[in-house]
Length: 227
View 1 (cartoon, one colour):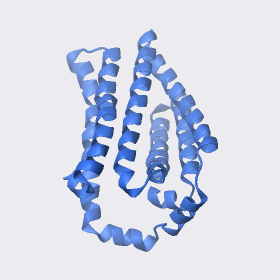
View 2 (cartoon, one colour):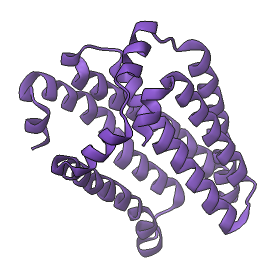
View 3 (cartoon, one colour):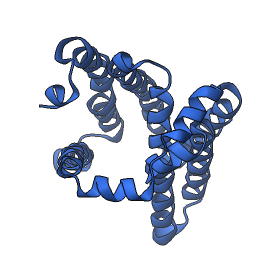
View 4 (cartoon, helix red, strand yellow):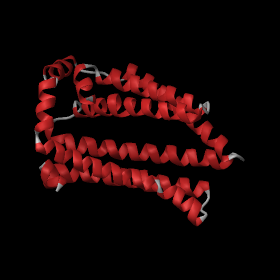
């Protein structure tokens, strides 16, 4: 349903609201609200991230280029995300390693991430521009509830959804390697941070642009590239 929001409302505003909302959750978690409070904060962050932010981001990036440039646009998006995430991740690892009590370092890191999210949300609100023609075209293409129902009946929707689910399951499972390495192999917190950044983000900024170029120039077909 996040796609419906992205079609009905300004992607710029949705991204800004999602960033600032996520920052608020970060500050709340950093106050150590207990298990129930932390769980609720993560639910809200999921709604902000997947319900508002991600679909609006996809919409905004798609509006930046033509149909034959979409692979490269999203490939370079992943590349830039990987580079920034690597820098921020290594900086976060250094902060945690520099503090005598790792838990204190993690709480400060959560606050810093919240501050960064606020700054980025404000920048998106005031700096990003949207063409009136693009916004009008977007509103004309807005998906109706009937179309959502029809999409749910289409087997290709479930096929693509299944591939995305598989990717998310694999990506999420990677996170469990960190506690495994810590508790079963005795690797320190700082080294775990380095391993996690390389595993999650370094490969991202290499593979993102390459796969985008391959999708546009070599495969020239999204289904063929997915296969």
